[in-house]
Amino acid sequence: MKIRLIALVLLCQCTHFTPDVITWTAIGDSITYLNDHINETGNRITIGYMTGVTSKLPNIKYINQGHNGWTTVGIAKEIEKLGLTKTDIYSVFLGTNDWWSGLSLGSMNDYINNTGINTTYGAYRIIINKIRNLNPLAKVILITPMQRSDFVYLGDAHNNAYGSYKSKNGQELSQFADAVKEIGNYEHFAVIDLYYKSGINVKNAVKFKRLRDTTTGLYRNYKYPSYLGVPFKPGTDEYPYPMEAIDYTYDGLHPSDKGYKVISKMIIQVFKKDGYMMMDTLKK
Image (cartoon, rainbow, N blue to C red; front, side, top):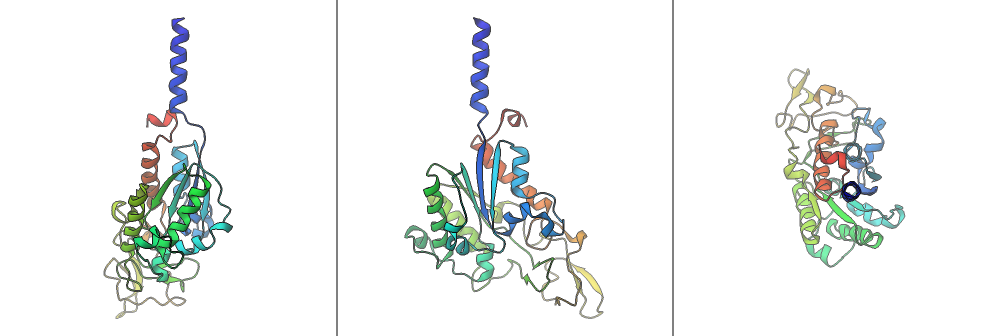
C-alpha cells in the first residue's frame, strides 16, 4: 500500500511539472522571419531565436509569423489574411521598420481608443484585438525593437539605413521601444526589453564598418562612432561588414548567432517563469 502511495505521489508530481505541448505564434518582421530562412543571411547565422528557445524547451512548438520588411502597421492591415490560429502563447516583435519607414508613432490614446492603422500605437491595438479573439486566455509577450547600427543588406547594398543613433522623421527608435513597454504595462503583458536590457547597442552591433579612407582611398576598419560621416558607395565599394565584423548583428540590424542567443535567453526566462518547461529542463 505504501509503495502504491509513493508511486501515485511521484506520478502527480510529474503530471504537475510536465505540461502538454505548448503552442507559440511568433509575430514579427525579418528578425523573426529569418529563423526559418537562414539561407537568406548568406548562412551568416545558424539558429534564430525561436529555434533557440525550442531547443531548450522542447515541449514548445512555434509557428513563424515573421514577415520580411513589414511594419506593425503593415501587420495590422493584413491581420485577417495572415492565417493566424489559436495558440497558447503569442509574441509580438515589431517596431524597427515602423521607425525607419517614418510612420507616425502616435500615443497611448491611439491604443486605448482603438483609432486604427494611422499610428503604430493604433496598429498594436488591432493586433492585440486579433490575438484576444483567437484565444482570450493566451499568454501575450511584447518584445521591443533593439538598438541598431548602420544597416547594409547583404544581397543588395543599395538597401541600407543609418542606425538608431539619430532620429528618423523626428522620431527616435527608443520612442518605439518605450511605446511597446507602455502597451505592455497597460495590458499587464510580459515585456522583453531588448532596447535597454539586452546589452545590444550601437557600439557592439558590429565590431567595425569597413570603408574607404577619404584621404588615402584605402579601406579601413572604422568602429562606432568613427564611421559616422564616412561615405559608403553601394555598388562601388566592398560590402562593409565582412565576416570578421560580425558582433551582435551580421549586417548592422539583423542578429547574428550571438545576438539571437541573447534574445532566446530572455524569452526562455519569461517562459520558465510561467512554468512552460519539462521536468528535465527544471534541473538546468
